[in-house]
Image (cartoon, rainbow, N blue to C red; front, top):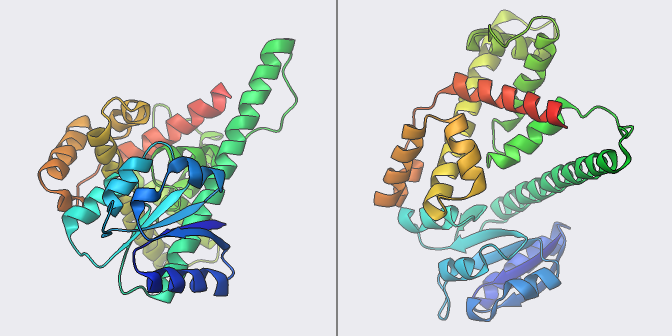
Length: 309
């Protein structure tokens, strides 16, 4: 991975560079003491994957720097700051920051966050490769009039693509959603779910049994079911926050238009948008979500994509 660091504190830039080098995470290809000299074109030319940006800088601060790069910089952004303002943190996340790290920086936290962002980058690259391959195959079929030979796309790959669209790739609970998707897809081969969708209890039971194996005790299955439900609930809340932030930034965004009302009751999305508009710290407030609707739509949308491709 290729990193770029923007911070007015030379000591912070040095520490970050040392951590990246010591942990063999990649290379730091450049650094600046202020955001006013930073451009998306220069970052893209240097093929920067991850950009560290300080919040408080004397020229152009971190928030303004991110706004300046918005829609142009192709990499991921991690913000670092000593400011604990929930409003500023909420604004940073709304602008697309992957993580917000508080100073003084901690080596373990830095390494953990970088590795999570690296995993997300690799996953998004895989998803893009899938989309490119599908597009090429469809183009070949259209131009030759014959179906191109291709292995059937796994439902899990389509699920990963959907997770990226929903803003929860790599989020805790995303793996559980893929497990449920695979379980439902297998279940449908035996019994259609179109008119009789399994209850949440049935879904979580089947998924937990498949994950833990036939020798698992009922107590272990119950624990796994409860833990999985909690993880998924948090992931869904994260997706709701993602779309509410997206809607506030660009109401006409195609992803917002396509997915927000499909996966959520739109009144819930509008309410979250109002909360964020009135108080950015509302992003941390718990939100009641319709888990069964989300899982149903996730399954049927993945199945539709699989059929279309």
